[in-house]
Length: 307
Image 1 (spheres, rainbow, N blue to C red):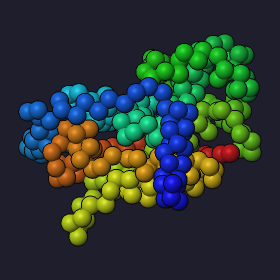
Image 2: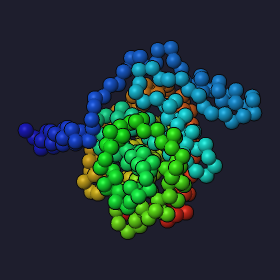
Image 3: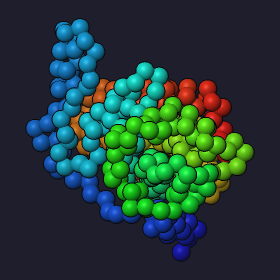
Image 4: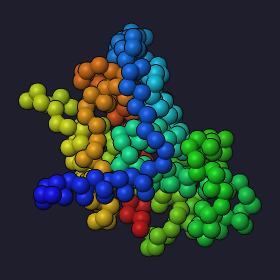
């Protein structure tokens, strides 16, 4: 066996190994049902024109994309709901938007499970903290590791609806204020506080925002770069700055197996780059609103570098 063949075989074995560690469940592409009689861009344009006619900005409403687990319509509605309060982010729709983004990442292939599984762990931490805040105050001490170890069934997607809880974990700013008052945020040592966990999600959101921005771009040369290349580039300028060498190498391998651009069209039920760009720009704008508000809240409280 030649050197190149051995190297290729080694990469395949490593990818399979990483996939077994980082992804649970199977992948279902549903290739054929998505585009039957469905043109999402026409609905997008109609809604946009209607909003201009009525003089209202309005919320973007999209139909479900048949045959897909990830639904861009749900993602947009949750992102918009998270930005209901001025200068703040509601945590329940914020976490629900991450549920959709996890489905998006899982659709890209088993290797991206490295990141999506870690994100699910982070959203579960905040959901459990919100649940346990209902307990008597004396039971919510600074030992957050013991808190996170119980009620693990609430770590599954969409199990705990934080919107029904109006306490400290109602919004980003209320969580920051409450955890600071209770001494739950350590600026020098690693903890599983909600604020530290939010910071990790916040960094990942910037990566996805940048990746989607790049996917939406129409190059001057007429040649689109591959999603694999764009995702790697977005990762290198964001999450890679906070990951260990091993995680960076594993992520690089994950991006190699990313689907081609046509797969993304099917994933959101569009037929060409023009429709894709129009839809993605709305998603990026919604993500940007949530990201900017979270960034401002964390920066005001000196939390952008929590260990």
